[in-house]
Amino acid sequence: MRLNVLVVLLFWSPVLCYASEECPNVKTSLGLIRKKRYLVFPDGSNVVLTMSLVKAFMTHAPSGWNIALEIDVLFPLPDEKFSNEHRRKKYHRQKREFWKQIENALNYHNMNGRACVLRCICESKSHLAPPGMSLVHDLLRAIFTAPLREEYSNEVSDMYSEILDPNFCDHVQDCPFSILHFILTLNKRKY
Image (cartoon, rainbow, N blue to C red; front, side, top):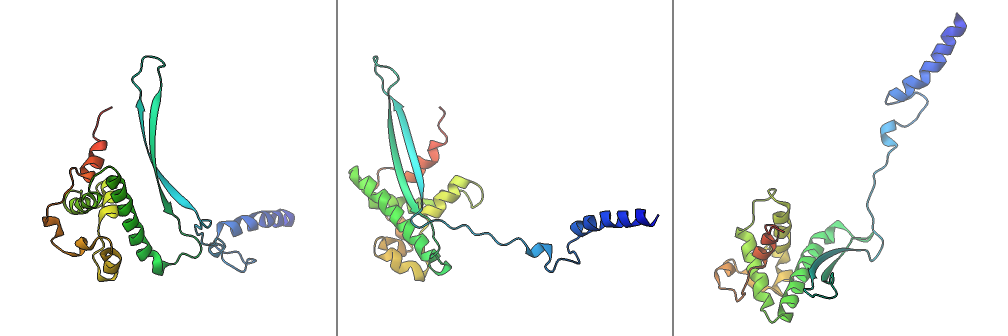
């Protein structure tokens, strides 16, 4: 009889230890064993945003030929040296560089790229859905919202000084089309 009780106690004691938060023979609690995880990227890592356009050639022979146009935009990822104190300034610097890339692309096609970027910034204030309603609208708002706080005014003033004027959207922009309207209507087309 004593042997049966001893076997049962030896069998159930490990089960009871694993079922509880703490075991008498373990010095640290089981909740402290798992450590925090951090996402660290290697030096020089980038995220690539690729936009592709494929159009079929209208030829009789040979058939099945396509033309593919691609645009790649690189965004650098933070590495181990990245700190929270530089995060906001870096964010707005990347935003300003993205605006400059759009401006240069439109200038290459003989359009006023600066006016089109400023028009898009103005339209993002009024034409986008409220935050949280649409992921596309939230992304466009994050890209085309101008930083208006004093600490960021020196970052913006060297390239886009018009943004610092609170009524700059009232001025007529010399841009023939709306980038924001073009992006938002891409999803509405039926294929």
